[in-house]
Length: 272
Image 1 (cartoon, rainbow, N blue to C red):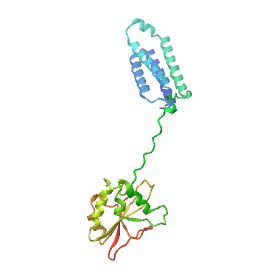
Image 2: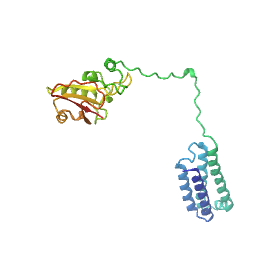
Image 3: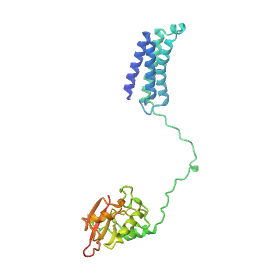
Image 4: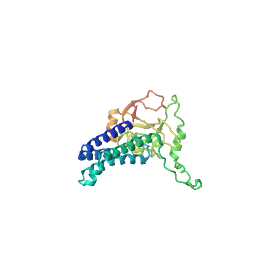
């Protein structure tokens, strides 16, 4: 709630309680006071960074009306004599002054910042060093084999299943968006069984991107050199290895040549 809206609400509540109590409607004044108190108590402050004591000040003026309404219900003569019109007016305008001043000060005063604990810089703990990346000879050998793939005119390399999958434990290096994305060793088992078939000459992995030296190269395409058609391949692949698309060879981008025996074709298994 904005500041001006809270001020309008405050003025309205003051005037309404004044009229109700002045007319002897202590019960209604009590209900209105309680409702206004609850609203101010549980609504966020008009100025989010206002000092906390200013918000307590506003809660206090609302409690004045709540107590005033309760007191007007007590059948005690001294209390009734105290609750004359002059006393009510004084309480109303004191409370009104409190809420107006507190809201104005909320805009003027800077928010109090928490004090930082004193400490000796010499005793401060040293920043944690980045954990060293464990050496992986398979990854290092693959990086040395590939070089850079940043040049779009340079053909994307293709590597064997063993070169890509052995030593690879990065799940997102291939098939990251598959349902229940398989681990690399699971895909290696799947494609190795496919390569062992007599109607399959080879299964190769296309390297699509090479990040830093500490990351495993990324692939989105596996090329199968075979007599089979895509429909026949689909029946041989487990459900978790099914591609998002089938690609024709040669593709429409530079790719390292794949040896395709006579009577066979290279079919691309592409994963999004």
